[in-house]
Image 1 (cartoon, one colour):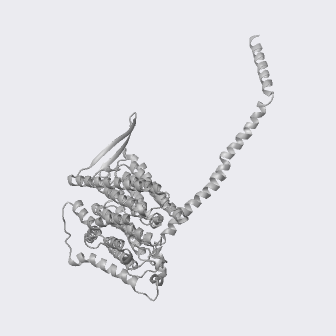
Image 2 (tube, one colour):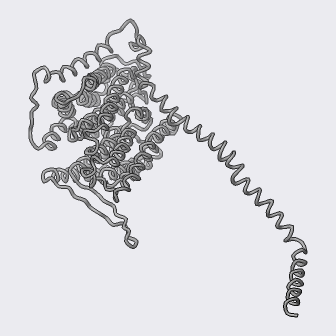
Length: 579
């Protein structure tokens, strides 16, 4: 009963906060307002500790979406985590996670951003290891250490910002755009964003973080942890636009998008497929941000949050009913047993593909049209459009395995159903916004309607890429290729793609194993070896010998004889001088 009350109160509180932020954001958007609030925490002599908060339409709209999704995720957890002994701990961790994201969103100051940034890293580690087993511990360690690299880069950018007299970076962006020191800071921030948003070569932690409970995955992969890097670059966009750093970011994010889309077409774990689709969409956001279209990146960030949270909720409901099995080869004909969940999953899948007039269509269509009219080379053009085709391909492959193939898992008693009213209510709340959210945001964010004038071939190329990608995904899953498991015919390519271009092994060895083993050797040979021998131990031995030598004089009568001798000497000197 206590658990239900905590869940319900958290849901109500976050939901009303979300609505207030949303309508405040609309007000700020219409009147083009930006407010800075400064709170003087304490003052010693002339030194003041000030907490600065920025309120504009970007921060308020993003906060409203984060709070809305968080409220529904907590309400969803009310049934998903039912029976968990430590459920109160879970809810508190989720609330701490949301609070850290709020700190990150409303901060124009690198110090307070670091508080939210590190808070996200710490709480995400606690949530990934929530199910306490070896796999979860390894995934949590990989997540924490990968993000720690970004934290170090952010700390270095804070140190560089000392040259400007303040850490409120928003005041310096336009003024210091072509300054070399600001470019160094920008590189550090991009590096930090690459680790947090899991770009190449830091991509391996994102699928590994699927060890967390599914409600956490719905929150992390839609609007909180992985989007923190994109949001930070949206704030810093003036610094790297039209520089060498933007070209570097465009290449890395394009390759990430391509790698994740390719890997998802060979993956059989349901949650990992959705995680790789998140990675692909993060690459899309980063790449369009590198091209300089900030509003489009933010627009896609918001629409993606809606349908991705819905995808994870539907996946959680399916896994819940499949008794914990996440292999899509065990699933099949789910539309018969779970019609509502299947409908929500299909809507979210189509929104991810960019199906006309769903949430993802408005952002992805404009993004690809802007790529068509931008001055990009053939390689970048290939990465954008081929990755879009791969997105539709793995979405239709997922559709085929879940809803067309017969079920392979034999239950002694089939309990697949849509009986959970709480889960269905949560999914329905996101379903509505996955349908109307893109259109609504399109009218709100862009104050005037615009039309991209292109030839008929260009205009239909985006739809053509989606249709061809969907057909390839469906046919590759449907055709037998003379074996039951199709990917086994292309084992080497399948293994290479499934292993994310060997990045998990490289990351595990490069970030976890070798640094920790090297630090152990340093500790053994230096701290407990030569440094210990020539350092503290040697000093201790020398002082011991000296103290023993001094004690020879302290524990005998020599001091009495020396005192008498010195007295007789003084008397003798007195007699010689005065007599």
